[in-house]
Image (cartoon, rainbow, N blue to C red; front, side, top):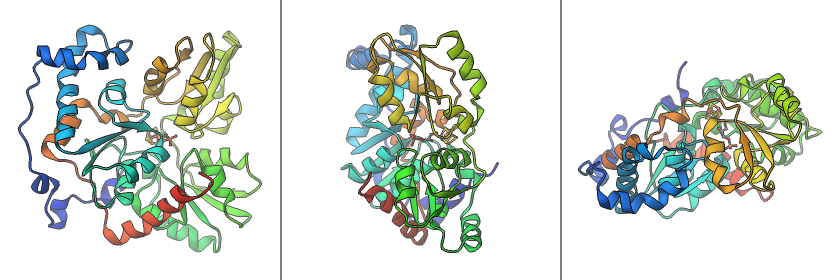
Length: 362
Ligand code: 13P
Ligand code: SF4
C-alpha cells in the first residue's frame, strides 16, 4: 500500500529550506524519572484516565505527560488530538480534542507557533493548509489512512474530465493533492449540507463509497462516488450488531457514516465522531450505547457519561495508534516530523478546505 499523503509532503530538508529543528533548535530530552513532583503534578490527570490505565502503569506514562505539558508551553506549541487518540493523549496532553472539522477549525484559530497533530497525516496537512505560517508536526509521518490512500489527484482530474460540470466534493480524509483538484471539502459532520449547497442535481462525493451511500439516503441529489473505504468501519456488519440488539433490545446502536449502509440502517443514530459523542453523552443514566467505531472513543468519553454503559464492538485504527506519548515528546524535543505542502498545491487545496470551513451552514 502506498502512502500518497507522505508523497505530497516533503520535509524541509528535502526542499533545501531550514528544518523545524534548525528554526526552533532541539532541546535536551527531559528526565523520565517518576519523581515526587511528577507524581504530584500529574495526579489530577490520572483521575481522568484511572478507569483505563492501571495504577501500576501510571509511573510509565506520567513522566511523559509531565515532560510534554512542560515542553509544549516552552515551545509555544498546542496539541490537537482526534477523538480516536488513546485516553492518555486525549485527556492528559491534548489542548483540544475533536472530530476532523473541529480540528481544522481549531488549527486556524489557535495562537501558537507550533501545532503537534495527534491524528493521521491528512489531519496534519489540513492544519498546515489553514495555518501555513505555523509549524505543523506529526509524531509519526507514517500515520496514514486507507481512504486518503485510495485516490490520487490524477484520479480526480480524470473524474472531472469524465463528468463535465459535476461538482466534486472531497472528503477531508484525502491528501492535499486530491483536495487541490476538488471544488470543496466535507467531513462526516457536514457532508449532506455541503452536497446540498450545490445547484447541480448530480454531485461527485469521493473517495468514501459508504459515506457517499449514507449521504445519498438523506438527499435528493444523485451522488456519484469512488471505491474507497475506511479499513476500520468497513469491518462492522449488521449481523454482529443485530446480535447485540437481540441479546438486549435496550441497546442503542450509534454508528459512524464511514460504515456500510447495511450497518447504518440498523443504527439508532449515525454521525461524525463528535456527533456520536454528543448523542452518547446526552443519554440518561442506565442507557446502553453501542459505539460502532474506533476502540479509543468509548474509553475517552466514558467519564463524561456517568451511568451510561458503553458496549464496544471496537475495531482499532492502526494509523491513529502510531501516535504515542514517547513519539509526541520526541516531536517536541527534536521538532519532527514537519508537514510541508508544495505552495502551489497548497493554495488550491486551501481554497477547497476554506470553502468548507466558511460555509454558512456549518
Ligand atoms: P470524524 O470527522 O467523524 O472525526 O472522522 C474522521 C475519521 O477518520 C473517522 O474514521
Ligand atoms: Fe482513516 Fe478509518 Fe483510520 Fe479514520 S479510522 S483515519 S478513516 S483508516
